[in-house]
Length: 468
Ligand SMILES: Cc1cc2nc3c(=O)[nH]c(=O)nc-3n(C[C@H](O)[C@H](O)[C@H](O)COP(=O)(O)OP(=O)(O)OC[C@H]3O[C@@H](n4cnc5c(N)ncnc54)[C@H](O)[C@@H]3O)c2cc1C
Image (cartoon, rainbow, N blue to C red; front, side):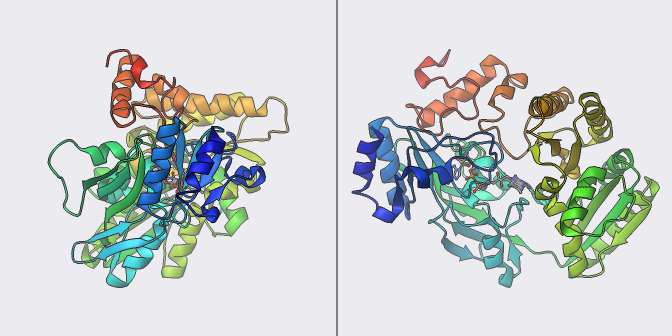
């Protein structure tokens, strides 16, 4: 069947836009979560919305699944392909279609790299605010699908707060416009439904985003604490004081050790935790906020409060944080990147319980995360060559998610459910909840061909939903 589909697509796409060679197909067998692998049946690289729609229509006609893929940096296996399906890669749809500073909007093809939007807007005094740590490589289409966040989303909001319009190809191959430059169109919030839908409601082929005025002044502070308890308490105290920093990020001792080894970021020695607090806005607001933040940090036990003196120092402070995931590879051959959310005030207690889990199972856990949002990223370290180590790491990883749910949080903050966490959804939602969500999915995708097997625990077909 896949061969017939390839034959059909050769009438729509040029030869360089289709991969059928088995060795080449293997390049696309996983995303950033390499535990799950499948060689796709076919990979295609559309250049235009029309080509994308033609590919999806052909998939619908042949009854074969398709999976969208941007840059493949996803950490939940969302872009894991199907052996008997088509992987639609948007990396050749990289044009910024419009940049309207007057409207504070940009329109991007889905393959545009996140940071390139900021680079385009920067000369005009604007930027694109959602800034995942992967922003140098991840795509806007992937950001939309995952509702991606980043360090500065504490103040500026997640991807969903910055998308005002979408052009999508529905799973039946129809091109639809949702919203546009104007905010809050009347009717059901279909943009809200699409953002974060992880490729299960169709493919975004153009994304209209807000551009954000770049602040007049930025001040970045690195505060060193003896442990995560104090750093967690300081985080809550800053927010409780009515100050909303652009970012509050935390790293614990193990994450600091890894970052130092990788990028020599010069964090204070002997720190059991560091906080990076960034304030931005009008000069006078930043200056007064900074004095208060420094007081609060010291009051909660910071033994060093270091202010970045210039852009170079600021970049070095951030380099440690932004390289932390990859840096952990230096201190452990294997690791799981976990992603969960808890209420901010629960940080000290939850971090203590993560430490206890780590001790109990003999598994090291490094914590590096968006403290201001309560969005944890425990990195669970293991050596796959040691018998039972991967299983122990998985146990700790799952127990951390249970902790998040128990605290009234969530099993994912920004990396999505994908294939990795679909089994955890029933820990947060009842069967009725899941069936109700499935109704929305079925309304977009009655044949169940858009990224099937992702997000939901049992890949029910639409006709099988319990109460339609
Ligand atoms: C080192 C590192 C750091 C990271 N830091 C962060 C972070 O700070 N915050 C954060 O949120 N994430 C982070 N991530 C995760 C990842 O970068 C984001 O989820 C990102 O948005 C994925 O973009 P992508 O282009 O790589 O998407 P892919 O991995 O290619 O795809 C991700 C999902 O989106 C779907 N998809 C892709 N394109 C489209 C489209 N056009 N239409 C519909 N569905 C589509 C895919 O089917 C899949 O389900 C990090 C990843 C790495 C490796």
